[in-house]
Length: 205
Image (tube, rainbow, N blue to C red; front, top):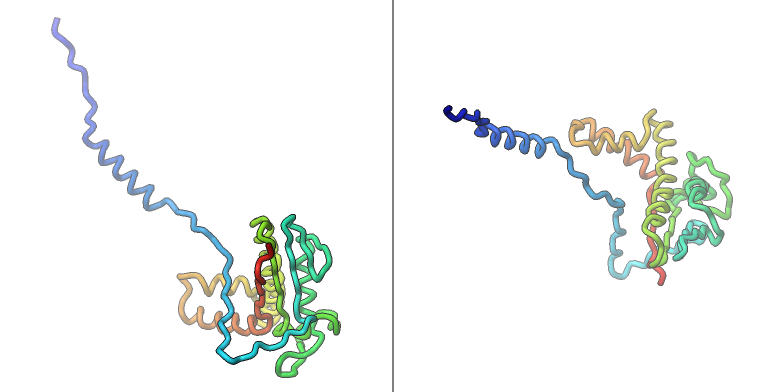
């Protein structure tokens, strides 16, 4: 009795299929990008220029110790309360700006013990070297959230659209140049009303 021929699978096309699948996954796979905190370092003042004197009431101090405790304006505070405290400080409007103009759009208490004007208000953050990174990020998020709250409020009042929404559209690569220019003009107006001034002081040991 003769031997039966065992049918063989033609594997010649399998390599082509595997190659096509590899290309497909390379094209469709998205890679996560590391995200960081967007900050612009203040420019170095020209030689011989004396920095302006900052009144204590225009300085909002936030200290974080090695145990991740939050000390805001020399008082213990929970992180969940930090955003509202920063909003109250930035929006106080108790005085005038550098030009002697009052803050007509501020809705704060206008207390003489708090900031004069959003253009003068500075938030100073200082961390301990042993502060957890998670706490550092949480503090930064709450402070930036305070600015975004106030910017969104004024943007809705002036333009009927949130500042954060316009900022996202302006930064999108598919946004047209004319729309991007229009949005950036509006964004600049809002940034001048509430300029982001977060100063990170030297870390404590």
